[in-house]
Image (cartoon, rainbow, N blue to C red; front, side):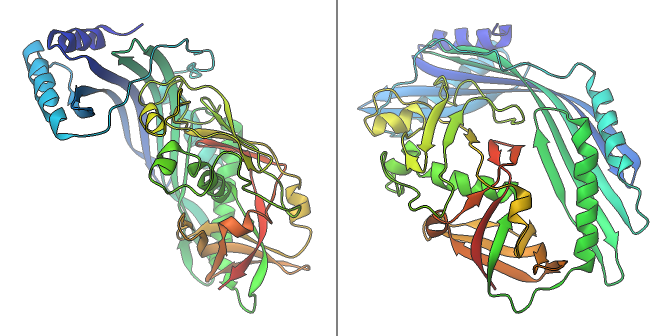
Amino acid sequence: MINKEVQRIENLIKSCNVVDYKINYKNTSSCELYYVLNKLETAREVNVEEINVTIYKDFDGFKGSSVFTISPGYSDEEIKEKINNAYERCSYVKNKHFNLPEKEAIDLSPFKSDFDEDLNTIATNIAKQIFKADVYREGWINSTEIFVSKITNEFLSSKGVSVCYPMTKVMLEIIPTWSGEKEEVELYFTSQSSKVKYESIFDEVNNVLENAKNRSEAVKLENVKICKVILGQDEVRSAIKEFTGHLAYSSKFRHMSKYNVGDLIQQGDECDKLTVIAVPYLENSTLSSPIDSLGTVLKETVLIEDGKAVNMYGDAQSGQYLGVEKPIGAFRNVLVKPGSKTYTEMTSEPYLECLYFSSFQMDSFTGYYGGEVRLGIYFDGVKKVPVTGFSISGNIYEDINKMRFSKEIASIEGYEGPKYLEVMMSIN
């Protein structure tokens, strides 16, 4: 049910004789806890309303658009003034004409709020799990920020697309410190999810503290020029999204896409062939949405199947520019089928696992990927040693034909799929 404020704005838009428009409404209720060491310094409860209105104008074969925000308490006259000003500004935006998506049936069954307790109780219980791991003499949690939110999203367009759905969001930022014999080091950990998983929070924080310990003991990696590298969930997600990015209508329209439907993204038998599915909903992703930003209803679509590009995706504007009869929408979540190897199998032979990067880079033009590694674990076949002070590099478009992916699954923001990948890379 669209709320009265959104309905009021739509009525005012119609009274100004505007034909095409969309209204995005978001109400966010949050509890925020800020800790220094394990002492609560600040607690906040926040309730914020955001209303963004996009006005469109068709003229001379173009479709101009203009966006403005509305704050609670605006009078009818103030809103009308904003609408009229926006409509005038549309004439300066000369985008090729396109049609906004039409109304369709929407499945909202996956979209529900899972927060049964009040937000402060949830945030406090999360803090308890975090500080349960803070038991080391040489290491400690320097600062912690916890954000727990309930969000109501509403969308209304001139084409009859009308949807209201809830979202929940938990964000953690933690800075662990370890004072070793060689030096004192800090690491940075952040996570974002649509669900609270108390049982995994302790394990995650304990793992971060252990990594801080390893970083304080890390030695310079020397005399290794090429090695089997194991990358973790964040880098695996970046690698997968590099290839799905080339299947976006917008990439094709800008002549930046390397692939057409039917092209083989992977070749040969030395790799695990990817199957990537675009989905509107993932259990742990705050990017889940039943529609895209223009109002196209999102439905599960296979983008890559057994290493072959089978579909493109994108919003109505980019799709229509390419001549697509029915654009499938701009997805932000991907589901990837597991690989062939377990993590135990990956680590049974010499390897270099990269745990923390200064900055992991991916260049779509050259194919370069890699970066400076702040912390890795090197296994020479006999012992494991924490290492630092090196970089890794490779070409993603060549290496995708040699990558093996894990059977273990990660579920993180915008991605559910293999948690690890292994590939031979250069060490610098």
